[in-house]
Image (cartoon, rainbow, N blue to C red; front, side, top):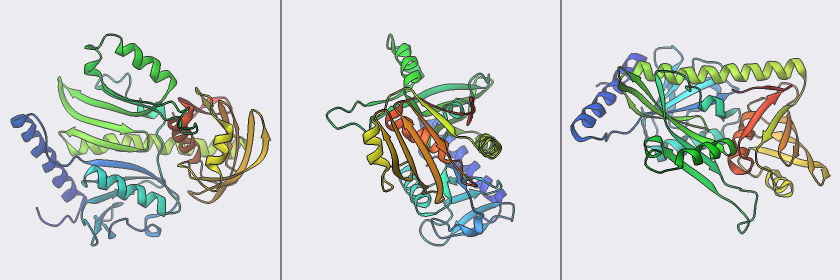
Length: 345
């Protein structure tokens, strides 16, 4: 195939990869080509104000799609920037390099963040007859505790194994109610044949394990991007209208003293730089900035809850970020509410 100049060229190239993998699967029982990956990203700036992580962006026909040219690994990144706030970065790089490129891009660019998928986003396909859940990843690292006291829980299970190990299904159900969901694996069926298999991660990444049609893949990824953008708009409107706080509820108690040390001076994955302004035995109050946009934030934290206030025109993407990371690190299953109504669902 020649140089990718249009969105149709890109689709043809990716479609050829799917078909080659299907042929390998039929002949050898496994695929060998690099899997397509997608990353949902939240942005506060237009594309012309954010540099490409590899080379420079070149338009694919002026339809809001871009490809990287020049630099290292050209023509391996494909950006769907057709939405105002949520972009989709597709890549055919191997998983290790793709994760590193995306992590570095988000970390170094002000105004760019991942989309942090809530439990409800990850379980979006539940109840849809065309989709089957095939796997689940759970995570709890107890990252605020000392090494001697820390508890760890990490589990990734494909559901075919639950029938072979008595009691495993019950363990999964109990763990799912108490710990954060890190990933979910789904497959879409048509006439008992798998047409799409995808694994979604809480940090907004999707790995397409198997696919028949590129349009179906992009529609599925776009569906999640649209849901997240709608949730972001809803949360922003609620904040603007109600001038209240986002409430985060945890299933696991956290060490407040250790939490204070973690967020001080911008440490930790939550991307917050906070200063403690009020201290009680079972309560901490903080003020500071969200390093994603350098907007002000206020955070009240108790043993099993937190209240986040994002004043003015600050970016509310801090709410799902804190909920996701805090949940996986030390707070277990975390839900986000505003005025008693669950959001980011």
